[in-house]
Image (cartoon, rainbow, N blue to C red; front, side):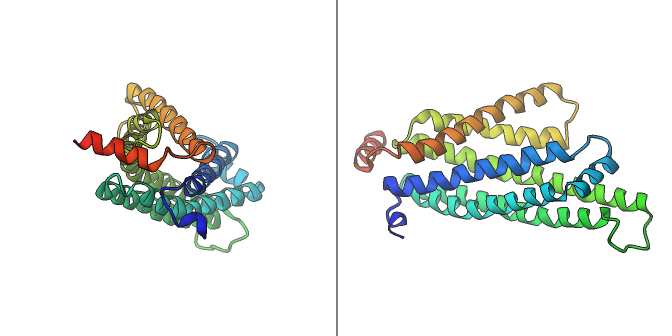
Length: 245
């Protein structure tokens, strides 16, 4: 594809932005909307009753997860080549961190499949009572949630590095880069809060503020790639050379 031949072109940037924006939309549906419709806090039986009665929505969430992961592969590769001229080591590190996140997200789907099998009364598991099946299914969902806390650590690293690369490139508004790097700590804070310090109220509020910042920065960056594209590469190269001097 001609659009993917030149990582410094505006056409390449737009393709990257489309992949990034696809991730944002599909991810919001899978991670935000679907759980809000199905999960009942503190009531696993009600949660699985919702999942079984609205299985189409549950499966749509899994489908959206799959779209996210496929789009992530393209976005990761394109971001690497786009920012390779800025710093090859940091660009490669950011790409590896994001690919590790995708691998964890893929593994998490096994826990969703296991939870659904355990909760479904149509599946023959004669060695377990209905209550035991729901309890085990709940464990599967908890392990899925633990996967979120794990992949967020790698996404924190990715966004912190990507933000630095965006700000240092001279081809995009520095505000996007600074906001990504600052907001990335929201994912780290969320993992710490959810796993180790759920009673630390200040940390809970801090993570929300940082996650709002990083979400706006990521969506803004994706839209900028699609609508405006990067500044001229020759001008940005001259700017980087001046900074180095």
